[in-house]
Image 1 (cartoon, rainbow, N blue to C red):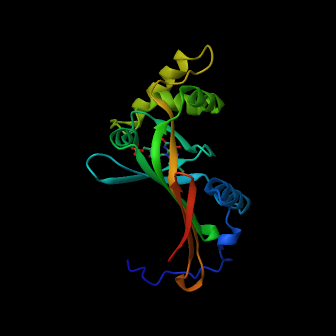
Image 2 (image 1 turned 90 degrees about the vertical axis):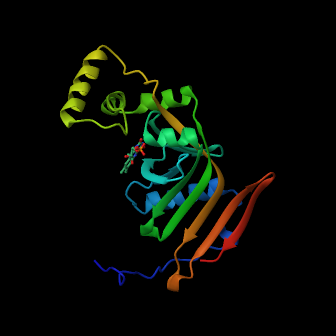
Length: 211
Ligand SMILES: Cc1cc2nc3c(=O)[nH]c(=O)nc-3n(C[C@H](O)[C@H](O)[C@H](O)COP(=O)(O)O)c2cc1C
């Protein structure tokens, strides 16, 4: 299929250095709210790119669950493929593709596990079905049938039928501590606005990049 003709001009207001917050997390917050208010479907869905020791880039979607000055947090299985890659190389890239707003945000940084207390707090807030799902799945491992998964669901439901579902030891959060954040705003004729923030010892270096 030749889709070489598929293109659209980006009619959006520009992005100026003066309008940018000096703090990239505050700027992200501003854009995140815009995405939410614009009705973008799952504005907290982000691509997470990792690379283990084999050097082969890997990527998948995860949900951003928390962010502040310390970083961007998502939750997953600590035995998954992404977790192995992060063990081998604790660095990652995130991408928010807010195409409906002609925007994207790219983040790179080092990655650390969140504290058990933080994972516990988030796990406790999840619906019971998701809590059970976390226990059931040995994420990224092969399984011969869906029936086996459903059997495990029934077992785990029985096991915890008397009370709360505890946090599995193999499940929790990761925090991406940003070193570089780029804001991209699509403009007509491919003359897009791009600003990158690069972490320095004493703050952030902000510069405009060519489109
Ligand atoms: C919209 C969307 C949201 C997702 N959110 C998460 C998430 O928050 N955590 C997670 O572990 N997987 C999430 N997934 C599934 C992952 O994309 C991926 O399939 C899974 O984490 C296994 O990845 P891995 O084998 O590279 O470890 C999501 C998928 C989609 C499409």
